[in-house]
Amino acid sequence: MTSFAILLSGRGSNMEALAEAVQSKKLSGRIAFVASDNPEAAGLRRAAELGLRTAVLPYAEGKKRGEEELRELCRLHGAEWIILAGFLSILSPEFVRSFRSRIVNIHPSLLPSFPGKHGIEDAWRRGVKITGVTVHLVDEGVDTGPILAQQAVEILPGETLESLEERIHRAEHSLYGKTLSLLFAGKGLTERC
Ligand code: GAR
Image (cartoon, rainbow, N blue to C red):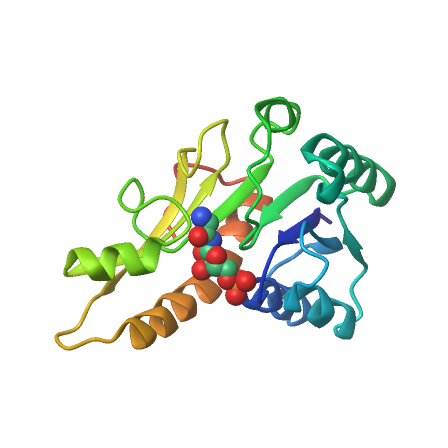
């Protein structure tokens, strides 16, 4: 069974959706651990409540130490994949190269539009009519790796930022598990979700 680590920095709703997909066997895999660069992350507490192994990465001592610890945890707990779920630190090119094509990210826009930390708000402020969600492999850039799956979300007339955020998160929660399921089954870039 595929073993994966989840990295997060905040609320952890995508982590929770993945944990639920594993629990209900919609996603065949094992969560090796959940780790964060932020000791205060609500998602870390939630993961512990769900009975998952958790860890704080020592990013406070620098990126190098944070990544050394991450590498060690992956080795120790047998994580083959690293799944980013709102992880705000940028992984170094050296780390990405050593885990080439085994790090996946979810982003709340239709990449390559609106990369960065505020994908939902940037799309909403720009006034686009359609935005969405992207799941992609991580490369050395920021939000630039090969796209695995996308789901469009229409921005409705009079839509508030809050309601758009809610609908985007709902789309994320279903798309991430479905995409990882295909990926772990050995179906990569050519498959559509
Ligand atoms: C999600 O919307 C995710 O797509 C986004 O952070 C949020 C985390 O929410 N990631 C990025 O913007 C990456 N560039 P969550 O903590 O509730 O899962």
